[in-house]
Length: 135
Image (cartoon, rainbow, N blue to C red):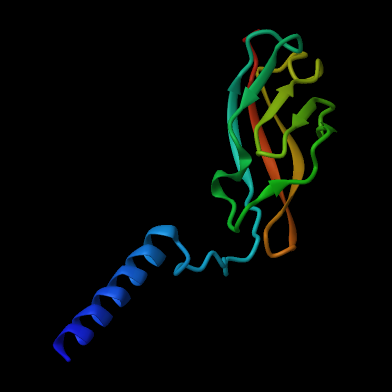
């Protein structure tokens, strides 16, 4: 009788170990709602508007699971600059020529939208604080 109980315990222990190592016992469900959050970056322009500046992801402060940027295209900013947005949240920015015209600094903005695993779409604004090299 002791051998049967011992074997049963060993089998359950082995099964539990295998399940925990493969992740089959874990749930990958994400209960965090998709929430895009506004971002702000400061850029020291070297040459305006001839240089393109590539920046890290806008997703770093957004909430949700498996977030992807769905506005992956060339976006015209409020001041007429150009942003190339990628699905992983990285973006490249080219300032408009009007930004540096008789100004030391200016602020430009654009919007992007994300979609998460929950199927929800949310949008946020990126503010770019630009300091021009001509000052």
